[in-house]
Structure formats: structure tokens, C-alpha cells
Image 1 (cartoon, rainbow, N blue to C red):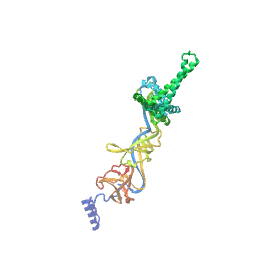
Image 2 (image 1 turned 135 degrees about the vertical axis):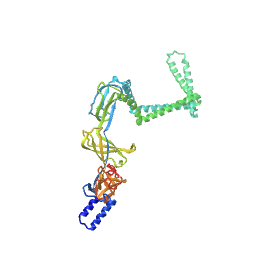
Image 3 (image 1 turned 30 degrees about the vertical axis):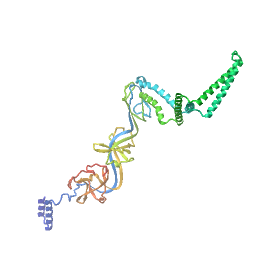
Image 4 (image 1 turned 90 degrees about the vertical axis):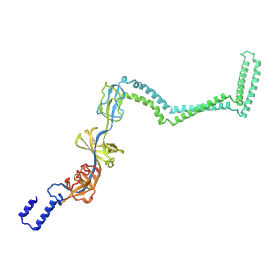
Length: 486
């Protein structure tokens, strides 16, 4: 090159000043002082764009599997022969709809006997509820009154056999005894002249009746006087005390039953009373399969006459009223995700169609896999059609923020040089490198926080080794990855 320049200088008459300038340039080129690229020719090699303000939509991308709002694989709970299958794939069922049942005679013995157990349990449950009805309350009140009377009698008897009565009571008992004895003596004297008369004699019969009454009154007076004046034996006292304590316990139980009848059964009482019925129903339910929730039959296996066993799959039921996608989002981006954010969903099986979605749940705890921490985010598909089905792989793009009036640079213009994010700016024939700070990023663009660069011309396809360094790949993350904040 130098020889060619020197030949042209010799062929044309030039001033000594121009010759000197050319010689200086040649010297600089030979010594390497003039760095390559400090001045470039405008030969259309670079693509450029002005750094301008605009709207940036920051997104986070992930993939997941489409699922129904609720799904269940229904299995047989016992062995038997299929009697009937009452549904087919595509049927929309209400909760508790019977789907298939087994022949009764093919069921195990415990299932067959559960019917009689259920009847007995239902009778017991009915009696339990009756005990809290008006009749039950009346019976509890009667029992309480009887227990109270029994206790009073026991206390009275205990007092009789364990203590000497008051003197006034003893005096009254003695007076009654003297009077009864006098009446007895008179009755004997009146009867004695007629004692030998025939039994059919009316006077004799009348006097005999008076004598018997006088004798009973006397015996009663003697007994009462003895009770008032003489305590019982230790055995009698112990027996009376035991009867009193037993009567007291019966009264406490009667009072508790009455109070319970008035208050009504507690939730725990009801649960205990219904437990036997529930157990019998659970055993009987093994003879058939019913829908645990409202949904669509998406798969069916049994046919009439099949011999099935416990644990064998019978149906799959899906609630297709909602479609959801669970995706894993990195801990770096999870702080940007919130319920209600918009999402765009795409499916490999449905080409050239985008679906709308919305974040409905964000996990509060992350899962660690292979050293990375991810959080589960659930997105609801809002405009499902007949083309989407549970199990399809879905690409999900979450819109995390929208910024208006921010300075934007295409991600492909950003490079990593010596660990720093830089862009290449062009001014005429010169290029310069500029370190930048990024804010929000999307798949294709990022926000520049260096506001002073507005209006500058950025090179979209800069040379990777223009200024040396590590010359990392395009994109704000060194590898062209979009999305998230930095």
C-alpha cells in the first residue's frame, strides 16, 4: 500500500506540505499509532438507529402444561363384576352422579352386610335425635325429679339410722306411743268378751278390725320411738350412707342429661352419633362409582360384565370450566409477578394463534432444583376454544410492567465488554464505546438509564472485537436473553 501511495505522489506534482502530511500518515500507520477502527469508512457495513423514547413492555417467559381446574382418576374400591356403566366420554355430570355399579352378589361379604349395618345405625341415629326433642326433654325431666326424690328419701333414712332425733321429736314420739298403747289396751278389752263368738258375729268382726288397727298404730309408734331414741348399727349406717351416695350420683347424671337435652347436641356428639352411619355408607359406596365434583368425563375404561379389582382405574373426570397453566419462574423474576397480571399463551398444537391469560396465583415459597430456586405461578386461560385440551404444552409470556416515555435500545445492540454492558455509538465516521445502565427489559428491547444518550446513533451490529475485551454476545444479559429487570 505504501509503495502505491508513494508512486502516485511521484506521478503528480504536489506541494511540500501535502507530501509532509502524507509522510506523517504513513509513519503513524507503520508504527500502529493510528488504531484500526478509530476512523471507519461509510461503506454501509453497520446498521444504526437513533436512541429514542418510547413504550417498553417488560415480560417474563416460561413454559408449562395446560390442566383443567380440577381433575380426578376414579378407581374401583373393591372387587366385583360390572353391572352397568351409565356414562360415556364427553358427558357433563353433576357432583354425586352415579357413573357405574357392580353386581351385588359379586361383592365381598362385608359390603353386602353393610346394608343391614346401615339400617341399624340409622335407627340409633334417629333415637339419638329423639332424645333432644320435646319427648326426650320431658323424659329427662321426669328422671331428674325421680332422682331428686330418691336422694331425699336416702338422706332421710340416713339421718334416721345415724343420729338421735331432737328431744321435741322424741317427746312427740313417746306421747304417740303412750296414746297408741292406751288405744290398743282399750281395743283388747272391748274385743275380749266377744272373742269366743262365731266369726260370723258382726260385733265380733267390728271389734276385731279396731283391734288390728290399734295394734298397727302401736307398732308404728314403737318403731318411730325406737328410731328417734336409738341410732342404727354400723352396718345399717354404712348401708344408708352408700344408698345416699348412689342416689346423689344418679341425681348428677339425671341433671346432666336434662341440661344436655335442653342445650341440644354438640357438633362432637352429632359426629359421634353419625359415625356408624357414615362408616356403613362408606362401605356400601364401594359397590358403585360416583362423580366427586361437577365435571366432564374425559376417559372411560369399564364395560358391562368386566371383572374389576380394587385400585383399578374406571374413569377420568375433569372440570373444564377453567383451564390453568402452572409455570416455574426464577427467583430473579418472581418479585415482578403479581396476581391479575396479563399473559399471552401459545400452544405447539395450535399454530398462528395467541390466547389471553391472567395470573391467578403466585406461590409464597420456592422450590430448589439443581441449585436454582423457582416459584410456581398459575395462569388462567381466559379465551379457551375447542382446540385446547388438558395436557398440552403451553408457552406463557407474562407482562410484568409497561413503561411509557423511557429511553429504549434494541437488545441486539448491547455487548458485554470486560464484564460491563456497553453499546457502540456512531458519530460520522467515528465509533465510540459507551458503558450503559439498563432498567426494564423485554424480549427485543431494554430501557437505558443513561438519559444523556438520547438522540445518539447506536450501532445495531457492532464488531465483536472492535475494542478488544471479552466482547460478549448481544442482548442485555450477555447471551441475548430477554426479559426481567437488571
